[in-house]
Image 1 (tube, each protein chain N blue to C red):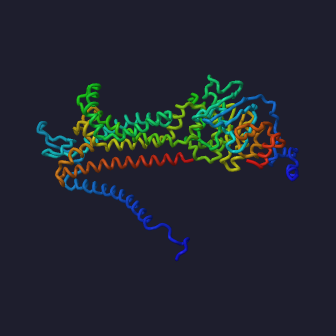
Image 2: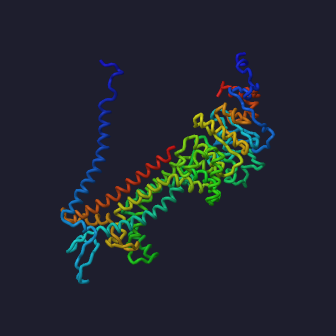
Image 3: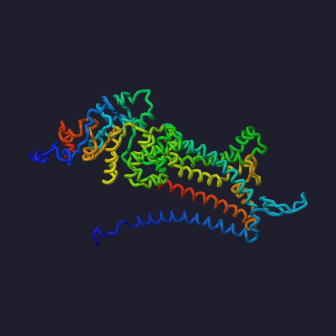
Amino acid sequence: MLIAEENQGIGEKTNMGTRTLAGGVLSDREDVTRNPIKIFTRELDMYYGAVRALQGITAEIKERAVTALIGPSGCGKSTFLRTLNRMNDTIPGARIEGTVMIDGVNIYGADVNVAALRRMVGMVFQKQNPFPKSIFDNVAYGPRLHGITDKAVLEHMVEESLKKSAIWDEVKDRLDTSAMQLSGGQQQRLCIARVLAVGPEIILMDEPASALDPLSTAKIEELIHQLRKNYTIVIVTHNMQQAARVSDFTAYFYMGSLVEFGETKTIFTNPTKKETEDYITGRFG
Amino acid sequence: MRHRLTKKSGNFSEWLIQKLLLLAGISSMLIMALIFVFLFKEAVRFFFTANPFDLIGKWVYDDWEGHYVFKMMWQSISEVPKYSLIPLICGSLLVAFPATVIAGVLGLGCAIYLSELAPSKVREILKPTLELLAGIPSVVIGFVMLAFIATFIQNTFHTKFRLNAFVGACGVALAVLPIMITIAEDAMRAVPKDLRDASYALGATKWQTVWGTVVPAAVSGISAAIILGFGRALGETMIVLMATGNAALVTGNIFSSVRTMTANIAAELGSVAQGSEHYYALFLVGAVLFTFTFVLNLVSEIVLNKMRQKLRM
């Protein structure tokens, strides 16, 4: 009875948005549920040696939308994220079964060029990891890898990428200084710019704001909101409010399984599974 | 009786162990300082009897030419002893430079392979093997160089002298290789996995990641390895004594016989009259050598510290 009272008004429209189970409100945003499917995984199993880290994940991730992966630590959400650009390939003993299709191509197929895949599916890491090089060289790293050497072209790409990641104004006068001198939040936006410079279609973010202060977090979230118009974004987060704020779809992972996957609005106001509700309301996790 | 909470912790044996360890620490530093003082004290006495300019060269009347000529020579037991350091420094550099280049190229390649490319099983075999190489006595390397490799090199390059700077450099390269590999590999392994991941995630291949991210991030450590290797190469004695021919010539020809500072001291100090000018001259050579290697070690230490700071995020 008490819980029912607490939950009063959940799902109700307020003049700011929709109230959620996790507290806070969902901002109203345009409908992306009809967007085409960008990533499709079917019966995806993932093993680290003998340990099964993912069990039969079947999911559809929509284009030009933000999909949040939530769940307690060790539930497999980061592992799932890293199967989408084959970053798990670098871990010895990692093995995969099932399929991951991006634009209808199985990315674990024998003829897939992993470098090209990773250019298309960029990744931002939990801990900001700029190279110990200049700001310019950080952003130009990707284009240079792929054979662009013309200075004017590189300068243009760097400027565009830094503008898109909303850091241009802060660094335009010191592109040749070391990236290590930037603040944590600036470094993370620089890392996003670095990803944008290789022209991805999908951006994977592994808890991109977990090491940042609230103000920097807000900037990153605002940036995600901007990027969503042109990119498919998959974001792992521990922060329920953040998932509610930034995402269109939410996937709840638990013990390597995908428990529930649906529109963020539904998951956060009216989840079908009891476990999801328990996790979102903070009674578990 | 005192309360158990106010009782002094530790006891006599604890105190004794601490003091003994402190003594061990201090004594090693003290020995270093004493060597330093002794070396320079003896070296300075050279200037009591000789002209400092003699260290570069001497005007000597040449009977053959019939006039005075300026000679940059090390002729310690001649009628007019000559103590020019130029041929010795020249010899040392002519061995140490090529040795560092050879060991640098081989060592960097090996370090990259070990830290980035080698499967763990290969690494498990290769690493101890390299460490065994460090355990080979330098006299053995010198012997192999003197007896076999020198002939091989002479036949290959048709050199005038069988024992020359290049033969010595090859031997010294072998001797400094293990330390260079170890330091360079440590430096590359210290590059955080984050940076490698960032590079791979941008679509870099393994080699692009190694060359574009790992090596630049570890460049200070790699430089330190090279500088330290150079210092070791300068200080190496037995191999150069055996394999370089020991002719104190001022030359730039790598296939010429040379005499290094170290070989010079080793060859002459045993038979010199204590307290003679010659004796002090040898100490002066030692002091110069010590200064060289001390500065190189210092620089490499500073460079390594810089790198540790740079990678701390």
